[in-house]
Image (cartoon, rainbow, N blue to C red; front, side, top):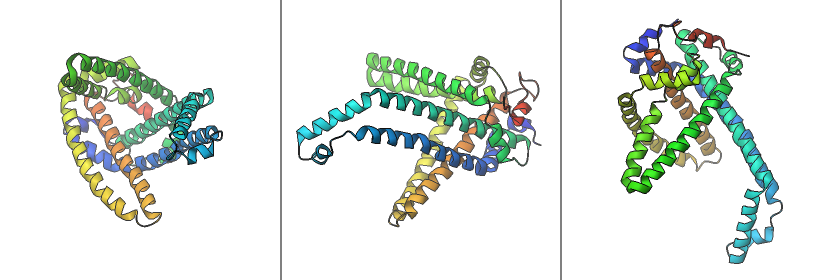
Length: 297
């Protein structure tokens, strides 16, 4: 059983240690996420295939040599994208993707938070417990995030119109830094059992503009390291692409592993920062231990 007060000291080592402990299970969760996302992707292909059944194959074959055929094909594609069946299908697939993403967030927070308190975590039990109402709370947060980002994006566009490229640049920086001020919303929402409004207040109170700016700077350095790593791995992947099937499997496996490790780090950081600024366990609106058990309601 761990003491959450360790996060109130030097947090970096604790977050890295938590990342190392949780990475294997979060990688497994990432694999499940990739598999589940194949369902809506297959749906997209099915919709396109069904719509393209009405396409004139002769027109498609003559695209390169016949401008009129290319124009006709373009009109067919526009007609497909504007059809009620295609639009309805894309809306359904979008909602499915949000549902799957919300479930993955819920499972990852369960895995990481339980690892804070226990030396071993039962993945199958966490998987079962992740099917709770927390998914719908996360969906609400995701939709709110889309709305806020749309508004902020509109403000940046307006600033760009008034002040040109300089306005767009500084406006974008301000928006990005502000997004970091939301870093504690999900852990406060899920672990602290706070309402969404209280979670936003909690995150804004503890992730000040200065702290958000520091996190933004650290993320730039982290991003540069990742770019160098991805470049080296990319070279290896390109070399393996000459071997049939091996290169494809390697690239997908590597994508799952890297996604899992990065996700484990991000969730560990959010959980660690939450306990760094939260009161002693039991003094929050909701006891974090409640989240260890899961809520199947």
